[in-house]
Image (cartoon, rainbow, N blue to C red; front, side):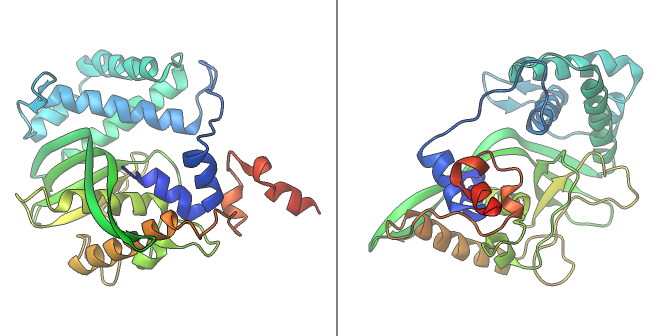
Length: 305
């Protein structure tokens, strides 16, 4: 299955995709006492997953949530001081999963983020958890070297739920937790497939891909939204993680957006698999700033000539 991270890598820089996914080059794992940005994000993701599985009474053997509908009182009870030890246990389990040693500062930040998540979710009139950190995918028919082929796309969705805000209709939310500091925007679907050297809104691309992968499966509600949840922004008044893509101010994903995204996605995969299209380096210097393969591909040499 082609994941959003794979496709984002190709959009950002075809050569980066080649190094990562074709040659499978890997950077060394960080030291156990070194917590990088992606490790921090993983610690929060795992902690949130463990917390909500506990709230929903997750049965691992049956892969079932015994109490998927969460009340406001359920969420608020986890904000009491008596629950702090349990929350810290979730965080320590996340360290262990990442192979990292606990860090006091990171623990306090993640604990605050979990509180922010609980407080935000308590605003919903109705909240039902559908899945937590589970794979979702769909199949696309594309033309590869003159032949029709079927390719699967998708990945692990942080959280899939049905939520209802006051005075609004229930919405299937594809929730993606983000611990970075920079929000992303896209004026239209074409922006998500931008390869012209501008900053690529990879988070939004990922959210739309996940939304496409669940649209045909979840039929309880006919409205879908992509929610990029930033826990450090969630305490702001009127904060809403739902993203707007396309014209207007509708925070639900419009049918035309789904249609345009699917069509562009097919063309992207066809381009990626076309043997006559080489894996070349991106012309964007912004994409090179934090690339693991910056010195390997020769871009740094070009800049110094």
